Image (tube, rainbow over the protein chains, first blue to last red):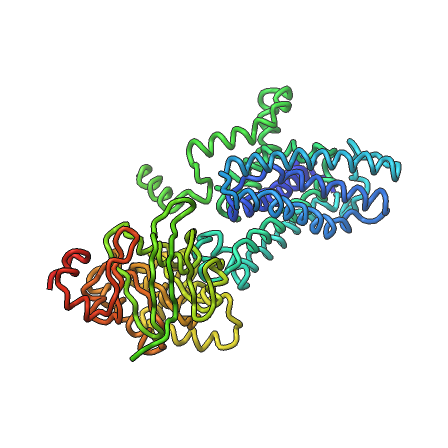
Length: 310
Length: 241
């Protein structure tokens, strides 16, 4: 079956961005800390996929639950051992944000050490590697093309179900809205925060496994995605999970298709400027709709547009 | 009739972080009675209430709940002990439905008996029934206050603390809310601590009154004693009888 590879690229890349933006938005909504280490949680997933495929010789999809657990645990550790003590000492959001940058540097260094150790121990390439050949195929197309959107849909469904139908999920929504009142009614707010950091990190780990099947793996892979993940979250409003989904799809598609269309019109030299796309999105969103897609009063906007037209 | 203290505060010095707002206060809330805390703005009424719920910084002194020392307990632990606190603002979850709000209020309870207590709440506040599935931000000010009280009531606490429940309400609604406060004491035997600006109305059904001024107790006694002293009413409460 002939499929323009750019469609695969668009679907897979957008799915990965949605998953990463969802996790980043979830942790931001609960603790109000923009987490700059978020993308490196995904890099952990990439390396777990490397070990599972190259060392264990198993399907990369076996790496999904492992990455879920490990990245979730690392994210929980960042909250428990770095952010929680800082918050207790009354650290301002800027200090907390910088502490996530510091944690990211440590994490990238640790991933580099792990990468060297993997070479030393198992004699497999652990830098600039690709795992695409380990992916199964369906109708001559890579499996990840189907798995990634289905997985996103499943995760979004689960999140929605948990947040609206379970007691703990409603408590999470309650805590996001009003942490003081939540502790007044007896909700353990710090535990809710801990769970949201675990889930946010775990989703990044899952995204990492899918990244390993599409991108070239490297310890710095996550770092290159940071602007896009923040752009997706900011476009989504940083305050709504559904906004993060819309933001992820929009920024992901714009990076892939937008760059292609513009390059087609003005010349292929423009492709090198693709990293500008998420930054442009951030600037435009902050200028015209600082609360993102989720903050726009669509009904009111539609009414006003209608009035202007008639 | 001599009652036991539900909550007793002794020699309390407290504030937020390093500041001191409450300066050596003794306060007693008798079991199954309504204790009113009044005083001018900035006298430390709300802070005193927050001290009893672990929401302020206590520098010295103690807070006892029955025989237990709750001075340095976390709010969520105090809630589990059987004390409910209703903040003045933001006292309901606006993005959650009325039902979900009640469910969250009963968060620490086991689900057994929840249905029955839930029905108690809807019986006490019938105006909430038709809004069960609606988000709390669609409720009117009075309904929101009723929901906040329902959220406290669903836990069947031993003590309910209200921080100015009638602020920003019309006189008619304020009256309804205060009637419900009295109803809570009479029907469920709950000890009530009420910080209130609507002094005249509160005095009508309150059992005891504590007047705070500049973080200190200016007067403490029964409602009758307060009403018998017009000078006191004039100086601290701004009411003449």
